[in-house]
Image (cartoon, rainbow, N blue to C red; front, side, top):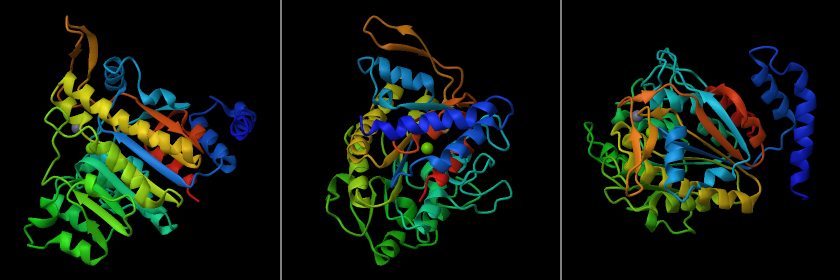
Length: 369
Ligand code: MG
Ligand code: ZN
């Protein structure tokens, strides 16, 4: 009861402050969140979780195949984001992630740069400047569009080696993903793993090897290029444990910003594979459960779960005789659907409503101490 009181008070204040404006102008949602941000308690820790390609149907599929339940149901605030990029009705993951990481609408393929290809400061960099520890965890290569957009600034997502090199300057304290070859088998012959070791990083072959009491900067590049899918044998403990270790090592008592990506929901969507979508979705939701468990115990952590876009134009039309989902797909690419946002913890009420994907950055930035 004691814990709920500030939230109730905030809710009442929010309603009183914002009601006269509600719906009267297009910026009403923006006005509402900025009004709330002045009174909202600020979390010590922000964990942004991105399910790449995770639309409502992907979520539904995971839920139906998981005894009709997902950890996402525990989130008290739910919103919707508009996802189009600066040059396309349908975003890619680079422009989608740059909207979250830097608050700008940019062109498809852009990594942490604006439409004129100028670097834009990311939430990870801003948080680091303010003394936060920072981390990135993914089930793709760490140079892939989504994680890259938080630490790199390059005109094209295809520039994996240039993106990897940006890690040398990035204020990242922990990263776990695939893509080792982009650091060690490079055209310029440089060995960036050695460079990163010289600048204080300890590398672990597998995230399972990271000790919970490890000190200093930590990295694991656990695949040469892209990690394999759950259906092909990636452990369903990998993302959960990598995320738990990231939380432990960033310091569960200190301020940190952590981005965790369930990267491969998107890839199974591109493959129009219902079974694969379900496997990656449940893997991501198990990780959400573990993160939420930490956040509930901690009481001072904001958890935001969203996606960059939907993939596959996926719909569920029934089930077969063995109880497997029958899915239909309208495309092998992405779609322009509104995408759900789930938020838990201090400041989470700011994430309800319908707003642009760039507002995820604005809201997180306003909640930094
Ligand atoms: Mg991605
Ligand atoms: Zn995709």
